[in-house]
Amino acid sequence: QVQFVESGGGLVQTGGSLRLSCAASGSWFSIYTMGWYRQAPGKQRELVATITTGGSTNYADSVKGRFTISRDNAKNTVFLQMNSLKPEDTAVYYCTGGLKTGLWDYWGQGMQVTISS
Image (cartoon, rainbow, N blue to C red):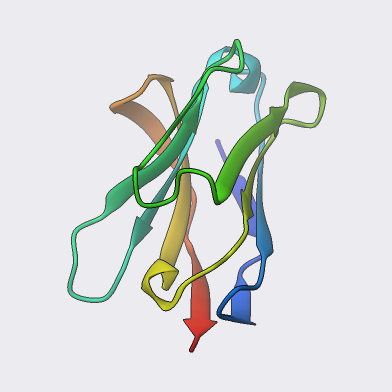
């Protein structure tokens, strides 16, 4: 059974930083594209960032230059470094994994990130 252990969420002031982590179980991790989504209250879930097995990354325009996705295949972990945080970054953040972007097989349980103004 696939499990994700997410950590790093919480409350931070505008301009602050957080680092989200998502540790996955299973030998599939190294061959899967990994991603982070977020969902703010009353809004649809949106894709924040993705990273392929080869390390290629993509970001939503709203987070480019502020967020960095990375992965450690030896530890089956994907990270999201979030800098210069804004109140509009407030959301529940989810990690996900799949053979390619958009074909997600696994989801984390989500963790709250709140940015105070």
